Length: 74
Length: 310
Image (cartoon, rainbow over all chains, first blue to last red; front, side, top):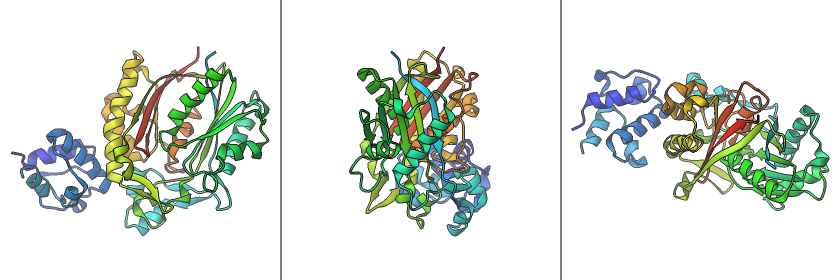
């Protein structure tokens, strides 16, 4: 099972422009300050760490840490 | 006879687009442009300038900056472009030959490649010259994307600039052209393509391709050259954007700060971005080993080692 801490850790290791905290889990990435290019890096790191494929259709709906956790555990 | 890189000339149009203003139009911030894209202005050719005109200006700059260079001694001319004069028939290199009054016993041909084109072009011309016994060749990069960028497309309008470069190849060179690795994956062609005269790009897919494919290829060049990361003085990789250079360089630990970044006043100039970076390094004797890598349209990628001639 993947949890919020796992995803937060990945985001903060991806070279993103802002540091993400556990209580940011429900916020949209744009609210936290992560831009589209930050998210490119995040999905590459997540793919590396989990082996899961992140297609364009799936990524469109992954707008927060919570939605990513939900997808990883689906 | 070994053919290497002797010198590089360049032409960057004086006119430009204010990328901060463009960012506002697309709802992006100045910070995003400066830190992630890296280009505050995008160089733009005049509408009346053709691709061959940019090439001619880069070659003239090379001529002016190198006393030993002579246009009349050029025996081979290769133009790397996917946005040639007119519809591409005849080849732009033939038009450049005529505009410059180069000898008619010259070999001239175009190479259709995008951002990997400079690396490929070095080996194409080096191999061609060595096989043919030629001593002076020109490798021109010129791919004015302003011909195909839709100014209302947020994905591409903030990225690309126009420029041209001319690399002089010959004997008694400054840099030897050494180990190289190539890559092609046409299954990703749709992610960066042109149809109906307009450029279309899936930014995330192109970013993924570059971030995942390029680092292992660079490491392969190093291992095949029996070199360590610490042996490389500079990494001059394609300047797709600051973000992609950062994404690739992060995978090289302490050597990340040896990756050059310089697209502030040009933008992504396709096959010209590597020679624009290299231009100032060719004659710098403090720089011994340079790793170059180009990646983009195709999808195509190539990485190589250039080493100072002793």
